[in-house]
Length: 283
Image 1 (cartoon, rainbow, N blue to C red):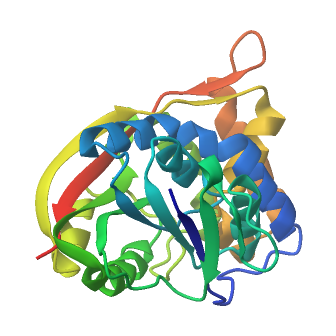
Image 2 (tube, rainbow, N blue to C red; image 1 turned 180 degrees about the vertical axis):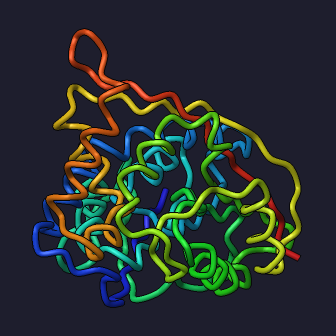
């Protein structure tokens, strides 16, 4: 089994003095990313990811979904264009060394490259499992990545997109909206927006893909306490625009207040959510 991580170097979308990128990446890896494990598992199970699967993961973050796919026997390639700090953590998980080649998960090889490499044996699955549909402009960025990736996959390959479910079934949507309020109203990219019912289908069609089924997965967000919840949610980057429009302290205060209804008697925080995924096909 072969694991490949791919690095790019675009500028970070927001500059927030209170947020150290390495700390936020670690918070994502240790606190927040695991909230999406049910989504990753459902997608891998539905597509039968395993030996013989050549999977390209777009926006692979710190590599948890890749690790899970590799553990099922898949050959995985990861692209993380937005956060070199998250990608470094993915390297650690998949045991790549500084030279870009090392023993990988299950004794495979991890290779690093500047962009997703074309293969003589084309990718059979492409995933974009970072949820889309909460920030203005996030769909545009995803469409561009999918258009670039689609020619690297075989004809009819599965392409899986993920997004937030209906706001009324996502407790976290209430928290996101409350904490992002200082930046509203704003049409500019990076600001919070309500999730649309057909967000994923619209992205697929704009990227030249053919929708071919969908599913919903329960992904509750559970934290040891409110401080852990705040750290995890800040790590998503969903509050960057609000912090830039006002200040970090104000948004942090709004976030903590919005979380209070979800603090249980034992001090833990629990927010039920539903996420959607769409299976599309390359032409």
